[in-house]
Image 1 (cartoon, rainbow, N blue to C red):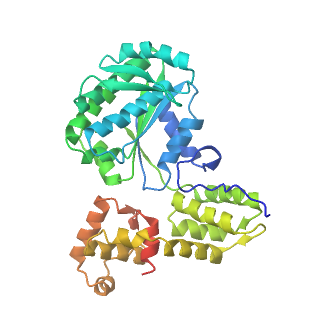
Image 2: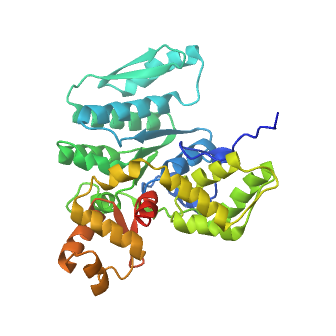
Length: 380
């Protein structure tokens, strides 16, 4: 029986520790803001590693006595669900790393002192947790109450905390979003010993929340643009992990993978995972082999046609033009003629795709947010 090797590459989950790569400068900058009690607004396209960066900071770089909560609001569709997510995060933070039932039970009465607008109980299960039941059934008010109570608890007990809210711009799509933003702003402005990390992949939407003078969150955080992992750092890390199976990857092969995926962390990890699984020990991986694996993965991406067909025809053309032109010279006469589209229609479609986060602009060049969709479009 051939020897089995544990695959070191993870592409379908948040990672930290040995599965996390690079971002030393990002970690140091964000930690500095956290320790100074400042809020951070971190924006980046999806699948670049925002959530993994937060997980790495929380698990391996905070002081042991710093509480934390990681709250994902991407799938919430109403105020009650938003409250439930925030409540779960606060509950997890209050519990921290404590596992003793006796100590958790004794914490209930202490916590209850500060959560006057909620009823605190200990929920017994294989993984005990605090249950926080709001007395107010108006959930936007309950969100403000639970946050302000949490800040009071931190201040009275000499504790510090950091709360990360993933895909924060989702709040804009909720009914009564203006009221929710006002409630959150009021509560967060009163925070004690706590900072927030607001992350989002809809750059235009997220930044408008913090850069528009007429919005409640105006200037309430320091902006941090999270780009791809440094190419050289990423290559060395991938190379080190391939050595566990005596596989060598040529630098040119990795550069090709990095360029084709626009540095997308998930896709690089996915290709590396596939190579580690399939290639035998003492293999040398060059650009042709990497190209074959990328082509195979794109060919098997059955969701790409369905995703593409969700866009109106004019936007489909715009996406195809950006992908095939490499984001440059898209308004040339030859391009407009080839795709039978007017400059005005193309500009309107491009603006809409940027607004919805399907395209982004960097250094006066356009890119598809979904690099796999871009690679698929180049082939059709």
